[in-house]
Image 1 (cartoon, helix red, strand yellow):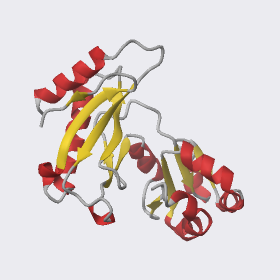
Image 2 (image 1 turned 30 degrees about the vertical axis):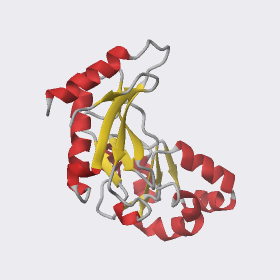
Image 3 (image 1 turned 135 degrees about the vertical axis):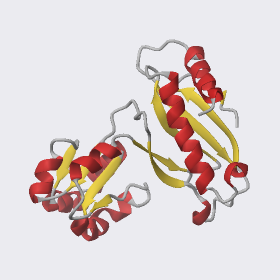
Length: 212
């Protein structure tokens, strides 16, 4: 990992004015030479951050039986088929749940019903659940997602993602940024040439460019 990333993170945190709340550290990524009206050229990736997000990640699990019982120990909410039908009848409540939840996980057997009841709410938000196969460990899946962020450009040239919190070390945050940059460079059609610039900042602080 380049020392230049660590330096950029340190500057972003040091130059941020003191606030009376715990700020997140975010990354702004500018893309170039991509037709973002073409969905196949958009960025849409889940990345597990090695140092964690530094924030609470809200995760809702749709499950029944033993899977639901095990999920209760790690998820913020566990919903069953009846809850799903209720949400399908109350669009406002479904939208509120979608907006306050970072990730959804669902038993694979429930995915069809989720598509029917909540597809129009979750789909446009990019929040359709991660399917849980019968031999998947729901606890392991949820714990991994707690350290996961979404890289999602949609049709915008500039997009943002969370990479940590101000009380994490610069090395930890830089490690997260390094993983994101590597993933982007591997996935974009022209690799680094499709990246116009990357900036790191705290919630209310100034942007600092991350050198290429």
